Image: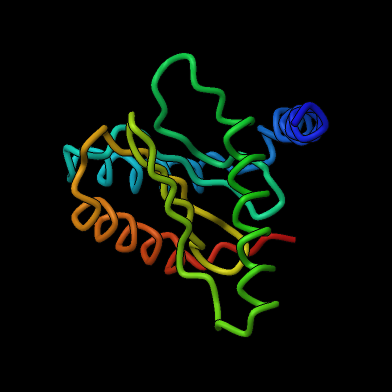
Length: 148
């Protein structure tokens, strides 16, 4: 577990060093989508958008939550899930859902190179937040943001 934490720290540091790489126009559009997502569903508490390589692009997170760490972890989790699905010939990953006693986390693709991470309240009905998250991921995909 300690080695995974070191990897997350390294990718998180890399994300922080690239935090100014996203144009302000794109960040505003992405932040607007996150704002609508969190205000449109009272069971969603936090959300963020990051690249598939773990760089944070936009976030709507409570104070104390590190967008760079969550970008790194979300990227690793979705990449591992993609590999698992591919290895078992089960198609393409739609989303990863983590359920805990204190809330849920969804991680899903939002286009070919971006991903959306959504946090919900404890006891949230998964249907409504998941539907809102899928709609937001489609909006992000429709922006047609190209990552080099």
